[in-house]
Image 1: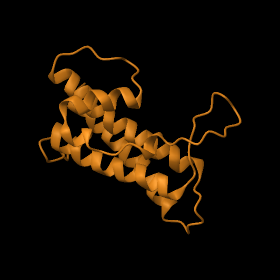
Image 2 (image 1 turned 60 degrees about the vertical axis):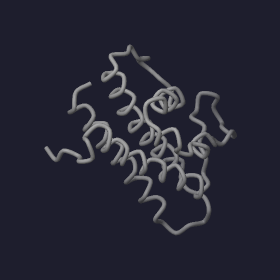
Image 3 (image 1 turned 90 degrees about the vertical axis):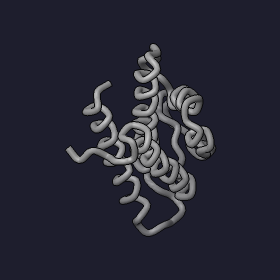
Image 4 (image 1 turned 180 degrees about the vertical axis):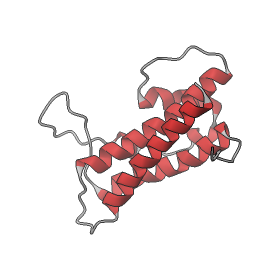
Length: 139
């Protein structure tokens, strides 16, 4: 994966986090829209995927083409202690009352989505540190 692909995923994660922050900044009634949960999970997936691909390339390892978030987190934690110590507990909360068995399980609790957003913010810093040696390239 080239540096431009990392930047693209990083920008997509940023867009998703903007959606989450916009939703969370609305008056709180202890529930948020489905979109906020989905956006926070997408942001996490994009950010972990950057690190996953980076370590795979760096170590010349063949990676799963369609890894789950859990698979990528476990893989990345083997190479990065900061990821190992991130608390992904709330990320896996996923509410179980869905209308369609193919639907993405999500939660609608503000505190849980805030926790996912906080993990994503920490991951952003780790991505910048790992992939770009602490300084995100502007161009």
